[in-house]
Length: 429
Image 1 (cartoon, one colour):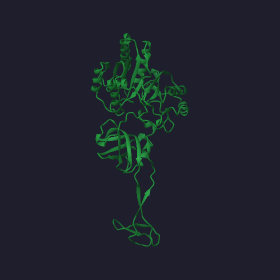
Image 2 (cartoon, helix red, strand yellow):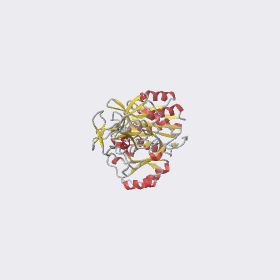
Image 3 (cartoon, rainbow, N blue to C red):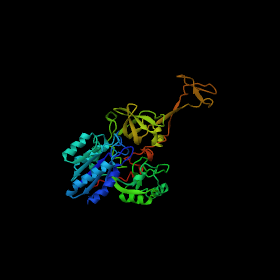
Image 4 (tube, helix red, strand yellow):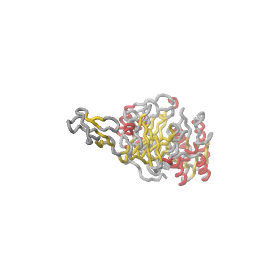
């Protein structure tokens, strides 16, 4: 049994680690490999400052005759050498080879990489402990994600993604798709796929960058995403396609709640607390409010791309009890929670004060000035019975789970339609 983990071969200008893996599958089949299950597409901590796009690593799991191992190693190196975007400063590929079963501490390490920032030395300690073979390029930071992919056996909730790839001559050009066919597919497979279209009906399955991916469909089963491919009509050639098991759409990057005082930059964070300020909209359409717990307070942000989600955030008032699921960033030198999900547990009372009608003539009353009470505007009546009366207003928001618009979802964000679809514990091998 051999596990091959790869990461960090791409850059903002091109390349794709999953594409390297897809080509590698074909080359390994030629060497007699027998694959065990679908490739693992593991999305790592989405807040990592040096990520490229979706921060994904990949693992292939296979049986291969021991005498062919060096051939496997050579093919992997050949493809990383060929497709790695080495001209980019932040591209630092890594490959890890593990023989045998995946140790429990490597699985635990994988979970840590999805949920936090990890230094390379932690990966190297495990690589050394189990005498794993590896390849590193430049500073070798890709070894962190490559080992995480090996450990990402996804024994709980998981989803699947079918990725199609463009022919090389079309890389970097506008993608050509029959968008109507995507709408038809979404309607037919809405119970088994997710995040195909945004709220306006525009496709979300086609990336915007110069990478080789033509489109990717995410769903609950391999059969669902394969059916989707048969319904979608690309208007350009598809060079190859691959189905992966993934942690996408699972919220598995979130851990137990932490206190405000325990927040660390660039980590996912779940924080329970109370709204401590009236939400404020700043230039650019971003909405901010303060969240407070017993250890301190922190700014929370719903940025402009979250769309209609900002209207929900604007309805919050001080005293509302919420849980904020977020990524911890630094905004204007202060820690800020970039909201990925908001759970409203209990709403505070919204009280307004209403001036009474005059008891003498029924006219309206108005303030005489600071601390001078009220007076009837019609007859001039003043009296101790003329005081503003508290009235509780009905809130235009109810306790529930609230998410940004689909186009602003991170790969790991669990969409509404996946609630109730979560998978039970299962073993990969």
